[in-house]
Image (cartoon, rainbow, N blue to C red; front, side):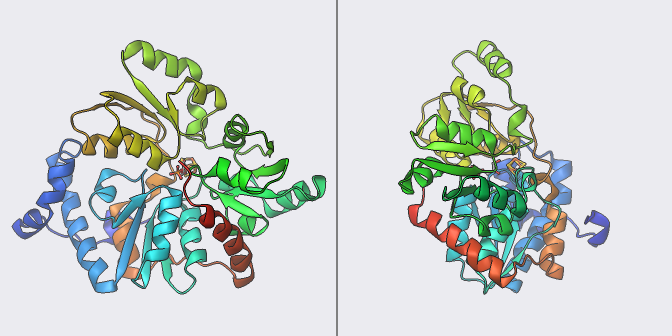
Length: 340
Ligand code: 13P
Ligand code: SF4
């Protein structure tokens, strides 16, 4: 783990203050000035180094506002970031997200250097299944195509017919023109897709440790406590929780919903840094913010992002044979694109 001790102290000079003032204007409601005086020099140095190295920073919607607004060139959900990764012209991509996202960028861009600031930024869904499990499922259901959520390592994608994200899961399932599919590894996403389609969805038992925490009682409690509340849920929540929501979709579709809606009071049933980011974009709205952090996403910090750029670490790579097979499954999904 990179700590501030690994980075020599960079001072908060008047020059740093002036160069970063436009960023602080955006996030000053969330970041106390004393904290900003420590973070602004890191942001300033990351922005300088990004130019020097020829790097682009891609950040997931769950990254903290200092990363999301301070240093990212592109922000988005898993699908949006995979698409953005393919358009990058610079030689280096620094991924402020979790490992499977960086790996996806690498699979789609084998000629680029893809760095992740902390190799331990994993995902409970990615860890819920092995390639051997997928092979056993295929043996058990011969001829049934395998749809794999992108929240998986490359070797699982390589065993699959096609990938999907929360932004296109139903469209991907229906694109196959079959009566049933094996859908891995998120049980709740699979069950949420099943509610929307006549295709039989055979699920695995993976869960997201963040979204499985939300309960129906809790959501009903929010509705009672906050009159007029509009509730948006991520489809990694249980189907019962999703039924309580006014809208269910990917993180980017939730952002779009808030952008386009007149709703004044909104609850995002998902990781809570995203509510901070959306709140900053909509100071006129009231975001109700339960604190459910993803410990994996939170492994990415300004300190280790700076170290990543300085030291060229940690490079994400995928063996060529796995990459080629995983690429096929991703490319089929990208042809379908976004469906939300
Ligand atoms: P999105 O693709 O909707 O951003 O979801 C990614 C994720 O990890 C949700 O927990
Ligand atoms: Fe994985 Fe859940 Fe964290 Fe998303 S929020 S990266 S699905 S553990």
